[in-house]
Length: 262
Ligand code: PEP
Image (cartoon, rainbow, N blue to C red):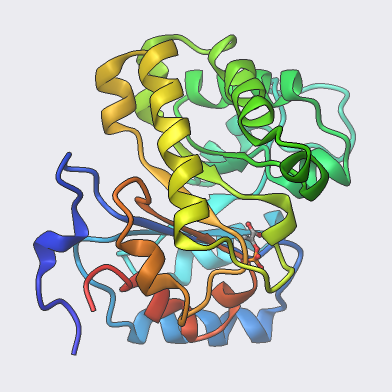
């Protein structure tokens, strides 16, 4: 039923479609077994890159039991290797247990835990310079969108990352555009709304980091993506995949993973 045209998993620019699950602070040994069950069953289109963001305590267990075609990512990490930072986890620790992907700058980190643009830039720098791949999230709140500030906010968040990392680091970044008003709200951005911002993000990267880097960088959309909404979103030229919260805990995630190829 899937994979009628595997080539459709790639954009004309050769960007491989990438879908991530963000489990947030959800899961138990029992529910994780069920999630791993549907991930193993798939089927997952071979030309889609898939990762799952897993709470720290379950990372090792998930890494041991996951299917080979799924990458395990942490949902956060700190900006130094070790020291007196109670409750924090460093890239060095993640690498020590074999995890080399991390989600940084998620809106819940920014808005609930007060992480600044600068801190997120510092975390991106430290993680990438120590060998990790980073899924860096940006996105505006509803007030910011309604105040006509979407681009201003997103460009500020991107600049804070660009100010901290060298050009050579951008190949280790996947960007995720996640409008805060769409996360966990059931209100998905329309394909046109999402495409408009994705295109602005790509232009910003081309102009401020480098043309080739802007062409090559993958930009995921996140915000209440479901098995129903993913098909139309996936057709937009600057949407290179999804970051999925709630639906990544359910078998529906497989439909989203295969959105581009079904
Ligand atoms: C997220 O957590 O990154 C997210 C997009 O959540 P949801 O899909 O539930 O809106």
